[in-house]
Length: 153
Image (cartoon, rainbow, N blue to C red; front, top):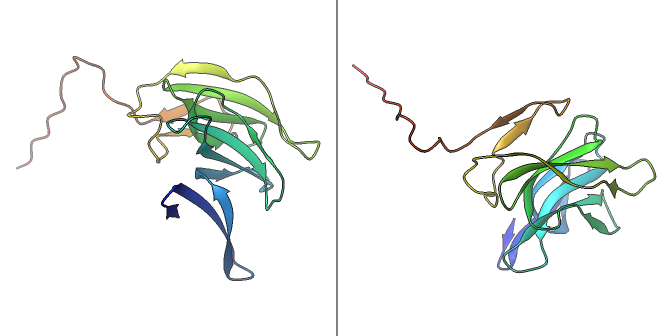
């Protein structure tokens, strides 16, 4: 849902047929085990957004994963790694250890530069394979490439 101050995350409980507010954020993704959620939330400045991980259903604090802007977090299928797009449009990987009841993030490391439209678009512009070794990315064409022309009769 969207409020005047930005996006809000809500969870819907199918058993109770009700929803509850979770907090400010967007682009939420459940971890593979369903115990955690990664989301884009307000960063340190008004213009920045960062990636966070928090426990479900709560309560509890969230931990910040990105530190200079980030969005579009996606989990590896085993839940041990999180990927996101940094503010400079690099695809970044971070190891995540949730075995002690609280997420512990490793150091973020850039995998490669992307040509996505914008790191801040509230849409997922990439998909990650279950093993985290391949990515499918919606990207802008290279400058100077020939346009694609489609003729229909």
